[in-house]
Length: 481
Ligand SMILES: Nc1ncnc2c1ncn2[C@@H]1O[C@H](COP(=O)(O)OP(=O)(O)O)[C@@H](O)[C@H]1O
Ligand SMILES: O=C(CO)[C@H](O)[C@H](O)COP(=O)(O)O
Image (cartoon, rainbow, N blue to C red; front, side, top):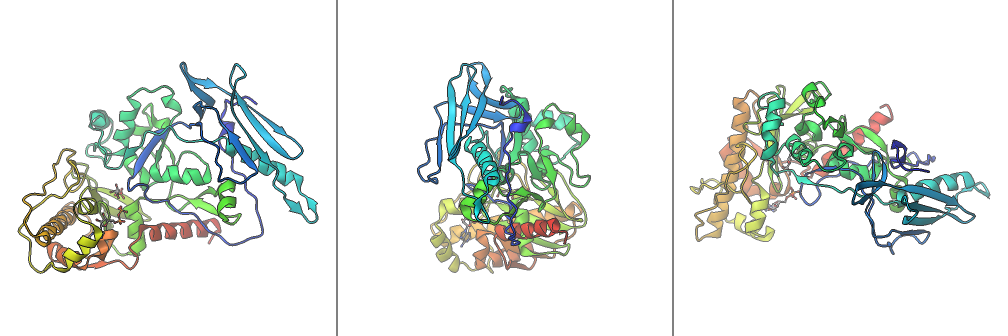
């Protein structure tokens, strides 16, 4: 079998059983605290034998970089990507695969024993061969030669080009937008760039679970230019040479497919376990808070500070890092600042944060005026990739210092909500809080004073709870409920 066509995309083998229970895998949240954009083709790479794997599995790969992309199975060589060939042998006790190059040199091989599927009293060979075929395909390990871009990374080099194609002040017109990252990468003119796929971090993680490459959700896809209102990519984007790299977009919480067989078996998930599209972390936190009325807002105080206000009106302006995500028939307006818990963690341990916070008097305004950032660059409410952190002067008292920082972060949050109001969004009435900073009662009191709004901790402060709600939605939809 020559490996050169679409057909060698990873296959999903699903065994339907009588088990009606559903465990829907949900949006996988953040990895290494970073939201990334993965732009890549498939990569098969040399990996050591995995001693921890079941004994029936044996895969050995020589030190060659193999790539499986949209146009086939290839190996990276001096002349770019070279074509490879796969053969399989289904013997008596098990099956083997061998991958060779044009010269017949073995580039990868592996073996699987047949799983003992039984039907009544006898061996179900048909199911066993089928399962083995797909297991072998999975054994040709794939990883992505990824060029990950972090959520707060800026690609100002691409900004002039993006501004020249997009409407004025569109969400993509910011150096940290996904589209700027894509254009910046595209302009590197790497070999085979046409066969790459753009994936957001959540898309990539979910792909590892379901195996369908190039699926996203309309929240993650907003900053690459997807229009959630018309549920399509705009024509100014579709006409670009890199548009073929864009993922297919679904509503958050839509079933993508079944959990991969091998993963299902390894972790004991049921046969009918499905994987659903996800969303962004701060939207998941909003969902977790179960706020449903316009005017309700959720501030996520994690490593960063993200605000989400439910509004009947959509507002967007890249000059201030303001954008609107679709939430069913309403809008989640807001933005994400680079200030937040990351700088607190750099300066204080969590234990110190708790201890020092206890001594703060939240009814008194701190005169200290900082712009707490871990490094230069801000997205919202000021969009400036060069904005410098301001954390001086540092008073002798750590309590005063922390008070000044918490107060300064609250001022940035307040400025954000004020900006949304000025731009015509539904006025904020109440702010719920999610993330690691939500546990700080003194900070909540400081924020209440600074924002002039009721502020409280959400009942569910973990974004993963919101992602579970999306899994529930997707499962219900799949069952036609
Ligand atoms: N008592 C506290 N007061 C304020 N911030 C806190 C407190 N305890 C932890 N944090 C902050 O919470 C952050 C972690 O929150 P989390 O929601 O887990 O973040 P992430 O965005 O990384 O998922 C840390 O950066 C830490 O500084
Ligand atoms: O700051 C962030 C990482 O923690 C995210 O970039 C932020 O939450 C973006 O998500 P959204 O598009 O929903 O604002």
